[in-house]
Image 1: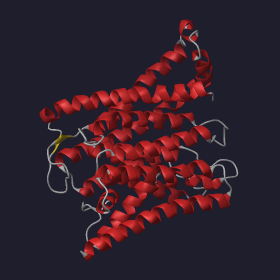
Image 2: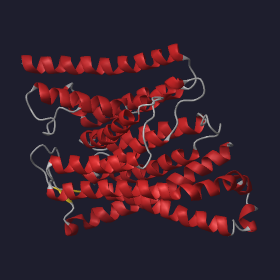
Image 3: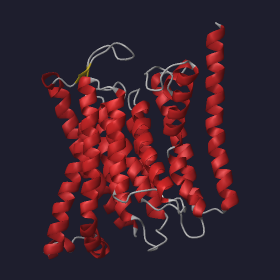
Image 4: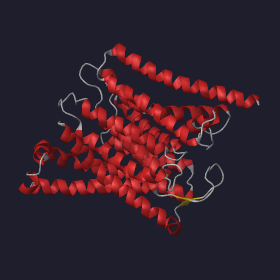
Length: 383
């Protein structure tokens, strides 16, 4: 893939979804009061005035409409191809030559894409209903497990080089449900969950374009393109969600992006030839959401509370307790996500010993954060 072809892929996938997401988020901001899409202050909320919800619908719409337009473009390209006048424009002929061999493969896989997007739509609708009606956590978990089980039953599952179908089936379901809830838990400060998702998806997309699929020795364009569309939709939303946020993604957005990223990690092949340890790449990229989820659950259980009972013990809140402002806490989590995620670039280039070092470096980064947080809590209790 040449530089121009890579640029065309990035812009062609991310730009339309960014424009659609940004536009619909703007519409929601203006219509939220009339539609009843407002997040009211109070309880554990940190904002002091109503903030529009519906950013998650904007993200979802950015992804769905972009793929719908892409489906139409794919049909037209297979039927007629681009006009010669367009191919005469500098660089576009080379891009067409690169894309043409992949058209039949895209067409054959399109039904699986829409099956995946349909499942994501169910979770988005579940989150939107929860934003409006405050559903019981049991209902949400049951629906999440049903959707995840359906997707894994359709063939999307972790392999882990294990010939244990029942084990990998269950693990895949837990992986999807876990990440759906991880990004929901992370959505507690302006720009946080969407920003972390953007960084994680960007690193994964880059890895998939750099590390070839061992079966074809080609960049993994399908999954990378899926992630690039999601990145565009997230960026369009984040323009409205940066501090001070003028719109929230709500559970609708958190569920959808958690599901999209989880399924992308399952669809992709991270382990390259003779380097099975590269399968750890998703754990590197998603170390921060996983760390936040596990530590929040541990804190709640230690306090004798339900792990589903909301509080202010999240990673971001603990950083604020250290004396950071909220934007500083969000930026710190961004940098921690990027630092851990960059390890994924190394896994397909190093041997097993190098992989151990990469994993240990990530563990050390998270351990430093944990020590600082524990120190802050001890100091707060001593006052």
